[in-house]
Image (cartoon, rainbow, N blue to C red; front, side, top):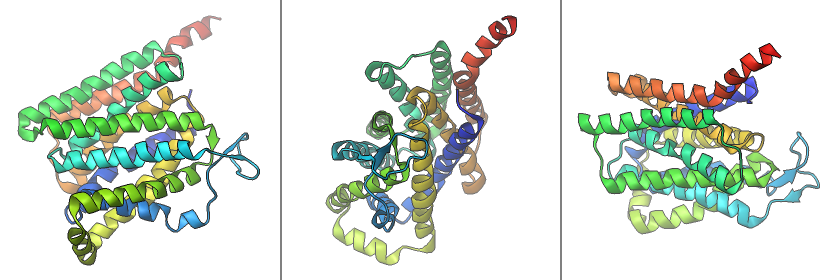
Length: 312
């Protein structure tokens, strides 16, 4: 089971990522999506990459890199490609096709179910009944948000939904890559993976958004856009990804992934408080289902064992 402090860190990461969708919306008001993602990961890597060694695996709790075996390039490249390039390229393209920031934060949490499924099939992790029940309850909340959102006029294109769903799948695959690395130095992993993603994102931005748009945008970016880049770099990526990866190297992926179900709960709340977006009853009900599913997933097995332990 998760230690209380690690549970707090997981919830904190979910909050940082939920709030991040507010800053994504602020940034996209001035910056094209692929360029915004490219700037985010460029400043994630630079200047820290000059002070951090290539990620290495440690065999102690200190995670020290001295005389440790470097992680193979192919594994870092795979994580970078899935987590930073595929996930965010597909996410931003989906948002460009009409998927709102709030709805994107919901759909992206399908990565939880992808992670659990892949961890069972590929890593042979045990699947608890509480995990299945919790996932079904939380999935009900996600379905409610999607269906009620469409009825209320927040419908989106099938292509846009497909892009975001594929982004969720990429995130799930990235979780499995992290689990396969062992006790890796997570800050180095984040920084070097971000650096590897920059050239791919830059090429995509040049091809899809054009050099003239890029130059004009950078020249005229206001303080709000740069604030969005700063938040995504420091809090969403450096803090959020480092904490998340650190938890994944300590616990099974099927135990950590459900914590991200809190992201849409925080995302909807922050959008309401900071952007003035409406919070109808169906959103509150859906958020409650997500929270209930998370609680079942995290505490269901422990509560089931308590009577047996008391009688022993």
